[in-house]
Amino acid sequence: MPENSMLTSNSPPNLAARLRTGVGALLSPAALAPFIATAAALAVGLLIIACTGAPVGDAIAAFWDGMTGSSYNIGASVNRALCLALVGLGFIFANRANLTNVGGEGQIAIGGMMATAAALHGAAVLPFGLAFVVPLIAGGLGGAVLGGAAGVLKARRGVNEVISTLLLTFIGLPIVYWSVQSFHLLRKPLSPISALPESPEIPDATKLPMLFPSDPTSPLHYGLPLAVIAVIVTGIVLNRSSIGLKLRAVGLNPLASRRAGLQPTRLMTMAMAVSGAFGGVAGAILIQGQQYYLTSDFSSGYGFDGLVVGLLSRGSALGVVLGALLFGFLRSGSISMEITAHVPSAVVLICQGLIVIAVAGSAFITERRTKHG
Image (cartoon, rainbow, N blue to C red):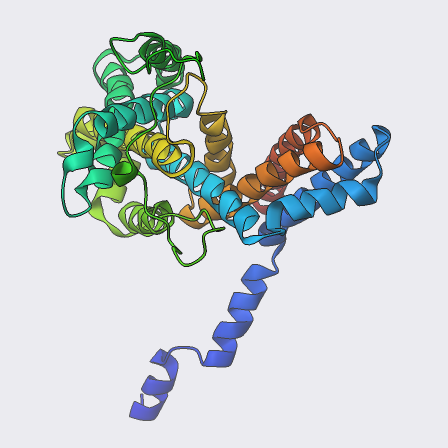
Protein backbone atom coordinates (compact mmCIF):
# COMPACT_ATOMS: atom_id res chain seq x y z
CA MET A 1 0.00 0.00 0.00
CA PRO A 2 1.40 3.45 -0.86
CA GLU A 3 2.65 5.52 2.01
CA ASN A 4 0.19 8.37 1.38
CA SER A 5 -2.81 6.05 1.46
CA MET A 6 -1.57 4.50 4.68
CA LEU A 7 -1.36 7.95 6.22
CA THR A 8 -4.83 8.80 5.01
CA SER A 9 -6.42 5.62 6.32
CA ASN A 10 -4.75 5.88 9.70
CA SER A 11 -5.14 9.63 10.18
CA PRO A 12 -7.65 10.84 12.77
CA PRO A 13 -10.95 12.31 11.62
CA ASN A 14 -10.85 16.02 10.84
CA LEU A 15 -12.21 18.70 13.10
CA ALA A 16 -15.50 19.01 11.26
CA ALA A 17 -16.20 15.30 11.65
CA ARG A 18 -15.40 15.49 15.35
CA LEU A 19 -17.73 18.44 15.78
CA ARG A 20 -20.53 16.62 13.95
CA THR A 21 -20.02 13.59 16.19
CA GLY A 22 -20.04 15.73 19.34
CA VAL A 23 -23.13 17.68 18.33
CA GLY A 24 -24.88 14.45 17.38
CA ALA A 25 -24.14 12.98 20.80
CA LEU A 26 -25.43 16.10 22.56
CA LEU A 27 -28.64 16.08 20.51
CA SER A 28 -29.24 12.35 20.80
CA PRO A 29 -32.46 11.16 22.50
CA ALA A 30 -30.46 9.68 25.38
CA ALA A 31 -28.82 13.06 26.10
CA LEU A 32 -31.95 15.17 25.64
CA ALA A 33 -34.34 12.89 27.55
CA PRO A 34 -33.37 14.05 31.07
CA PHE A 35 -33.75 17.73 30.13
CA ILE A 36 -37.11 17.18 28.47
CA ALA A 37 -38.29 15.14 31.46
CA THR A 38 -37.16 17.88 33.86
CA ALA A 39 -38.97 20.56 31.85
CA ALA A 40 -42.14 18.45 31.83
CA ALA A 41 -41.94 17.95 35.60
CA LEU A 42 -41.54 21.70 36.16
CA ALA A 43 -44.55 22.35 33.89
CA VAL A 44 -46.62 20.04 36.07
CA GLY A 45 -45.35 22.01 39.07
CA LEU A 46 -46.70 25.20 37.54
CA LEU A 47 -50.05 23.50 37.11
CA ILE A 48 -50.02 22.54 40.79
CA ILE A 49 -49.24 26.15 41.75
CA ALA A 50 -52.20 27.30 39.67
CA CYS A 51 -54.42 24.79 41.47
CA THR A 52 -53.45 26.30 44.84
CA GLY A 53 -55.01 29.59 43.74
CA ALA A 54 -51.78 31.59 43.86
CA PRO A 55 -50.93 33.85 40.89
CA VAL A 56 -48.56 31.79 38.74
CA GLY A 57 -46.73 34.89 37.51
CA ASP A 58 -46.02 36.09 41.04
CA ALA A 59 -44.89 32.63 42.09
CA ILE A 60 -42.49 32.37 39.15
CA ALA A 61 -41.10 35.85 39.84
CA ALA A 62 -40.56 35.03 43.52
CA PHE A 63 -39.03 31.68 42.63
CA TRP A 64 -36.60 33.24 40.14
CA ASP A 65 -35.70 36.05 42.53
CA GLY A 66 -34.92 33.51 45.24
CA MET A 67 -32.52 31.72 42.93
CA THR A 68 -30.78 34.56 41.10
CA GLY A 69 -32.19 37.85 42.39
CA SER A 70 -28.95 38.97 44.05
CA SER A 71 -25.37 37.89 44.63
CA TYR A 72 -26.48 36.62 48.03
CA ASN A 73 -29.21 34.43 46.53
CA ILE A 74 -26.86 33.03 43.89
CA GLY A 75 -24.17 32.34 46.47
CA ALA A 76 -26.62 30.67 48.85
CA SER A 77 -27.91 28.48 46.02
CA VAL A 78 -24.39 27.42 45.04
CA ASN A 79 -23.49 26.73 48.69
CA ARG A 80 -26.49 24.42 48.97
CA ALA A 81 -25.55 22.75 45.69
CA LEU A 82 -21.99 21.99 46.72
CA CYS A 83 -23.16 20.11 49.83
CA LEU A 84 -25.55 18.08 47.68
CA ALA A 85 -22.72 17.45 45.21
CA LEU A 86 -20.46 16.03 47.90
CA VAL A 87 -23.14 13.59 49.05
CA GLY A 88 -23.81 12.66 45.43
CA LEU A 89 -20.10 12.05 44.80
CA GLY A 90 -20.02 9.75 47.81
CA PHE A 91 -22.98 7.83 46.40
CA ILE A 92 -21.42 7.23 42.97
CA PHE A 93 -18.08 6.29 44.54
CA ALA A 94 -19.69 3.50 46.55
CA ASN A 95 -21.95 2.58 43.66
CA ARG A 96 -18.91 1.88 41.46
CA ALA A 97 -18.38 -1.17 43.69
CA ASN A 98 -22.11 -1.99 43.36
CA LEU A 99 -22.75 -0.65 46.88
CA THR A 100 -25.61 1.68 47.76
CA ASN A 101 -25.03 4.26 50.49
CA VAL A 102 -28.36 5.68 51.69
CA GLY A 103 -26.93 6.96 54.97
CA GLY A 104 -25.90 10.43 53.80
CA GLU A 105 -28.15 12.13 56.35
CA GLY A 106 -26.48 10.39 59.26
CA GLN A 107 -22.99 10.95 57.84
CA ILE A 108 -23.72 14.67 57.41
CA ALA A 109 -24.96 14.83 61.01
CA ILE A 110 -21.90 13.08 62.46
CA GLY A 111 -19.57 15.12 60.25
CA GLY A 112 -21.14 18.37 61.43
CA MET A 113 -20.93 17.28 65.05
CA MET A 114 -17.25 16.30 64.75
CA ALA A 115 -16.41 19.56 62.97
CA THR A 116 -18.19 21.55 65.69
CA ALA A 117 -16.35 19.68 68.43
CA ALA A 118 -12.98 20.27 66.74
CA ALA A 119 -13.76 23.95 66.16
CA LEU A 120 -14.82 24.54 69.76
CA HIS A 121 -12.04 22.53 71.38
CA GLY A 122 -8.64 23.55 70.14
CA ALA A 123 -8.72 24.10 66.38
CA ALA A 124 -9.19 27.88 66.66
CA VAL A 125 -5.60 28.43 67.88
CA LEU A 126 -3.95 26.52 65.02
CA PRO A 127 -1.84 28.56 62.55
CA PHE A 128 -1.57 28.69 58.74
CA GLY A 129 -5.23 28.12 57.95
CA LEU A 130 -5.34 24.85 59.87
CA ALA A 131 -8.02 26.37 62.09
CA PHE A 132 -10.69 25.70 59.45
CA VAL A 133 -8.96 22.75 57.76
CA VAL A 134 -8.79 20.54 60.86
CA PRO A 135 -12.58 20.68 61.52
CA LEU A 136 -13.14 19.72 57.87
CA ILE A 137 -10.86 16.73 58.34
CA ALA A 138 -12.60 15.82 61.60
CA GLY A 139 -15.97 15.94 59.83
CA GLY A 140 -14.67 13.73 57.03
CA LEU A 141 -13.30 11.21 59.53
CA GLY A 142 -16.64 11.11 61.36
CA GLY A 143 -18.51 10.35 58.16
CA ALA A 144 -15.86 7.81 57.14
CA VAL A 145 -16.31 5.90 60.39
CA LEU A 146 -20.05 5.65 59.86
CA GLY A 147 -19.72 4.66 56.20
CA GLY A 148 -16.79 2.33 56.87
CA ALA A 149 -18.76 0.49 59.55
CA ALA A 150 -21.40 -0.36 56.95
CA GLY A 151 -18.63 -1.47 54.59
CA VAL A 152 -17.16 -3.82 57.16
CA LEU A 153 -20.57 -5.33 57.88
CA LYS A 154 -21.12 -5.87 54.16
CA ALA A 155 -17.68 -7.29 53.42
CA ARG A 156 -17.30 -9.54 56.47
CA ARG A 157 -20.85 -10.50 57.39
CA GLY A 158 -22.79 -9.97 54.18
CA VAL A 159 -25.12 -7.41 55.78
CA ASN A 160 -27.04 -5.46 53.14
CA GLU A 161 -25.49 -2.00 53.02
CA VAL A 162 -28.84 -0.31 52.32
CA ILE A 163 -30.15 -1.61 55.63
CA SER A 164 -26.95 -0.94 57.59
CA THR A 165 -26.44 2.64 56.34
CA LEU A 166 -30.09 3.43 57.01
CA LEU A 167 -29.93 2.01 60.54
CA LEU A 168 -26.62 3.74 61.21
CA THR A 169 -28.36 6.99 60.28
CA PHE A 170 -30.87 6.34 63.06
CA ILE A 171 -27.89 5.95 65.38
CA GLY A 172 -26.01 9.02 64.14
CA LEU A 173 -28.93 11.43 64.39
CA PRO A 174 -29.69 10.66 68.07
CA ILE A 175 -25.98 11.01 68.88
CA VAL A 176 -26.04 14.54 67.48
CA TYR A 177 -29.27 15.24 69.39
CA TRP A 178 -27.62 13.99 72.59
CA SER A 179 -24.53 16.14 72.00
CA VAL A 180 -26.54 19.36 71.81
CA GLN A 181 -28.76 18.37 74.73
CA SER A 182 -25.92 17.68 77.14
CA PHE A 183 -24.08 20.55 78.82
CA HIS A 184 -21.12 18.19 79.29
CA LEU A 185 -20.78 17.81 75.52
CA LEU A 186 -21.61 20.58 73.05
CA ARG A 187 -24.66 22.40 74.39
CA LYS A 188 -24.06 26.03 75.23
CA PRO A 189 -24.89 27.26 78.74
CA LEU A 190 -28.38 28.52 79.43
CA SER A 191 -28.84 32.27 79.09
CA PRO A 192 -31.78 34.71 79.13
CA ILE A 193 -31.37 35.08 75.36
CA SER A 194 -31.78 31.47 74.30
CA ALA A 195 -32.50 28.18 75.97
CA LEU A 196 -32.64 26.15 72.74
CA PRO A 197 -30.57 22.97 72.56
CA GLU A 198 -27.68 24.12 70.38
CA SER A 199 -23.93 24.51 70.56
CA PRO A 200 -22.07 27.79 70.99
CA GLU A 201 -21.09 29.55 67.78
CA ILE A 202 -17.78 28.30 66.42
CA PRO A 203 -14.82 30.72 66.55
CA ASP A 204 -14.27 33.00 63.56
CA ALA A 205 -10.93 31.38 62.77
CA THR A 206 -12.63 28.03 62.18
CA LYS A 207 -15.25 29.42 59.78
CA LEU A 208 -14.66 28.89 56.06
CA PRO A 209 -13.19 32.07 54.54
CA MET A 210 -15.33 33.93 52.03
CA LEU A 211 -14.42 33.39 48.40
CA PHE A 212 -15.08 37.06 47.52
CA PRO A 213 -14.25 39.12 50.63
CA SER A 214 -14.62 42.33 48.61
CA ASP A 215 -18.33 41.56 48.18
CA PRO A 216 -19.84 41.36 51.68
CA THR A 217 -23.22 40.29 50.26
CA SER A 218 -21.89 37.12 48.67
CA PRO A 219 -21.92 34.04 50.97
CA LEU A 220 -19.72 31.96 48.65
CA HIS A 221 -16.89 30.38 50.63
CA TYR A 222 -13.88 28.09 50.22
CA GLY A 223 -16.18 25.08 50.11
CA LEU A 224 -16.75 25.80 46.41
CA PRO A 225 -13.15 25.18 45.22
CA LEU A 226 -13.01 22.21 47.58
CA ALA A 227 -16.10 20.73 45.92
CA VAL A 228 -14.71 21.43 42.43
CA ILE A 229 -11.49 19.60 43.32
CA ALA A 230 -13.54 16.71 44.74
CA VAL A 231 -15.52 16.43 41.50
CA ILE A 232 -12.38 16.38 39.34
CA VAL A 233 -10.52 13.91 41.55
CA THR A 234 -13.54 11.60 41.82
CA GLY A 235 -14.01 11.60 38.05
CA ILE A 236 -10.34 10.77 37.48
CA VAL A 237 -10.23 8.06 40.16
CA LEU A 238 -13.38 6.32 38.97
CA ASN A 239 -12.71 6.53 35.23
CA ARG A 240 -8.95 6.86 34.78
CA SER A 241 -7.31 4.92 37.61
CA SER A 242 -6.71 1.34 38.66
CA ILE A 243 -8.77 1.95 41.80
CA GLY A 244 -11.87 2.64 39.73
CA LEU A 245 -11.23 -0.49 37.68
CA LYS A 246 -10.79 -2.59 40.83
CA LEU A 247 -13.97 -1.22 42.36
CA ARG A 248 -15.89 -2.06 39.19
CA ALA A 249 -14.44 -5.58 39.17
CA VAL A 250 -15.42 -6.14 42.80
CA GLY A 251 -18.89 -4.82 42.14
CA LEU A 252 -19.42 -7.08 39.13
CA ASN A 253 -18.12 -10.28 40.71
CA PRO A 254 -16.46 -10.35 44.16
CA LEU A 255 -15.55 -14.04 43.88
CA ALA A 256 -13.84 -13.67 40.52
CA SER A 257 -12.03 -10.54 41.65
CA ARG A 258 -10.71 -12.40 44.71
CA ARG A 259 -9.39 -15.18 42.46
CA ALA A 260 -7.76 -12.52 40.30
CA GLY A 261 -5.75 -11.33 43.31
CA LEU A 262 -7.89 -8.42 44.46
CA GLN A 263 -9.09 -7.91 48.04
CA PRO A 264 -12.87 -7.40 47.95
CA THR A 265 -13.16 -6.95 51.71
CA ARG A 266 -10.68 -4.10 51.80
CA LEU A 267 -12.03 -2.49 48.63
CA MET A 268 -15.66 -2.61 49.81
CA THR A 269 -14.72 -1.13 53.17
CA MET A 270 -12.65 1.57 51.48
CA ALA A 271 -15.45 2.45 49.05
CA MET A 272 -18.00 2.88 51.83
CA ALA A 273 -15.55 4.80 54.05
CA VAL A 274 -14.74 7.24 51.24
CA SER A 275 -18.45 7.58 50.48
CA GLY A 276 -19.16 8.38 54.13
CA ALA A 277 -16.24 10.83 54.24
CA PHE A 278 -17.84 12.87 51.45
CA GLY A 279 -21.01 13.13 53.53
CA GLY A 280 -19.02 14.04 56.63
CA VAL A 281 -17.22 16.86 54.83
CA ALA A 282 -20.60 18.12 53.56
CA GLY A 283 -21.78 18.28 57.18
CA ALA A 284 -18.65 20.15 58.22
CA ILE A 285 -19.16 22.66 55.39
CA LEU A 286 -22.76 23.23 56.48
CA ILE A 287 -21.51 24.15 59.96
CA GLN A 288 -18.37 26.08 59.02
CA GLY A 289 -19.72 27.89 55.99
CA GLN A 290 -23.38 28.48 56.67
CA GLN A 291 -24.84 27.86 60.13
CA TYR A 292 -21.83 28.30 62.45
CA TYR A 293 -23.43 26.36 65.31
CA LEU A 294 -24.78 22.85 65.75
CA THR A 295 -28.45 21.97 66.19
CA SER A 296 -30.09 18.57 66.21
CA ASP A 297 -31.71 19.07 62.80
CA PHE A 298 -29.09 21.18 61.03
CA SER A 299 -28.74 18.78 58.07
CA SER A 300 -32.26 19.69 56.82
CA GLY A 301 -32.61 16.73 54.47
CA TYR A 302 -29.40 17.35 52.51
CA GLY A 303 -28.49 13.68 52.84
CA PHE A 304 -31.66 12.45 51.18
CA ASP A 305 -31.52 15.11 48.44
CA GLY A 306 -27.87 14.23 47.82
CA LEU A 307 -28.87 10.59 47.49
CA VAL A 308 -31.33 11.56 44.75
CA VAL A 309 -28.61 13.62 43.04
CA GLY A 310 -26.34 10.58 43.02
CA LEU A 311 -29.09 8.34 41.66
CA LEU A 312 -29.92 10.75 38.85
CA SER A 313 -26.26 11.18 37.85
CA ARG A 314 -26.01 7.53 36.73
CA GLY A 315 -22.42 7.27 37.94
CA SER A 316 -21.17 10.48 36.29
CA ALA A 317 -19.32 13.14 38.31
CA LEU A 318 -20.53 15.77 35.83
CA GLY A 319 -24.08 14.47 36.27
CA VAL A 320 -23.69 14.97 40.02
CA VAL A 321 -22.75 18.61 39.44
CA LEU A 322 -25.75 19.25 37.19
CA GLY A 323 -28.17 17.53 39.57
CA ALA A 324 -26.76 19.31 42.61
CA LEU A 325 -27.07 22.72 40.94
CA LEU A 326 -30.66 21.96 39.95
CA PHE A 327 -31.69 20.87 43.43
CA GLY A 328 -29.67 23.63 45.15
CA PHE A 329 -31.33 26.38 43.14
CA LEU A 330 -34.73 24.73 43.57
CA ARG A 331 -34.29 24.87 47.35
CA SER A 332 -33.46 28.58 47.25
CA GLY A 333 -36.36 29.35 44.94
CA SER A 334 -38.83 27.43 47.08
CA ILE A 335 -37.90 29.43 50.20
CA SER A 336 -38.44 32.74 48.42
CA MET A 337 -41.66 31.53 46.79
CA GLU A 338 -43.10 30.53 50.15
CA ILE A 339 -42.18 33.82 51.82
CA THR A 340 -43.08 36.19 48.99
CA ALA A 341 -45.85 34.48 47.01
CA HIS A 342 -47.21 32.38 49.91
CA VAL A 343 -46.93 29.18 47.87
CA PRO A 344 -46.08 26.19 50.11
CA SER A 345 -42.51 25.00 49.64
CA ALA A 346 -43.95 21.48 49.53
CA VAL A 347 -44.85 22.24 45.90
CA VAL A 348 -41.14 22.27 45.07
CA LEU A 349 -40.71 18.94 46.89
CA ILE A 350 -43.45 17.55 44.68
CA CYS A 351 -41.61 18.92 41.64
CA GLN A 352 -38.40 17.25 42.82
CA GLY A 353 -40.20 13.94 43.10
CA LEU A 354 -41.71 14.39 39.65
CA ILE A 355 -38.25 15.18 38.25
CA VAL A 356 -36.85 11.97 39.75
CA ILE A 357 -39.71 9.89 38.33
CA ALA A 358 -39.54 11.59 34.93
CA VAL A 359 -35.76 11.32 34.56
CA ALA A 360 -35.67 7.71 35.77
CA GLY A 361 -38.57 6.81 33.49
CA SER A 362 -36.97 8.49 30.47
CA ALA A 363 -33.70 6.65 31.10
CA PHE A 364 -35.55 3.33 31.33
CA ILE A 365 -37.44 3.97 28.09
CA THR A 366 -34.28 5.08 26.27
CA GLU A 367 -32.33 2.01 27.37
CA ARG A 368 -35.17 -0.29 26.40
CA ARG A 369 -35.40 1.23 22.92
CA THR A 370 -31.64 0.91 22.53
CA LYS A 371 -31.67 -2.77 23.45
CA HIS A 372 -34.51 -3.53 21.07
CA GLY A 373 -32.97 -1.58 18.25
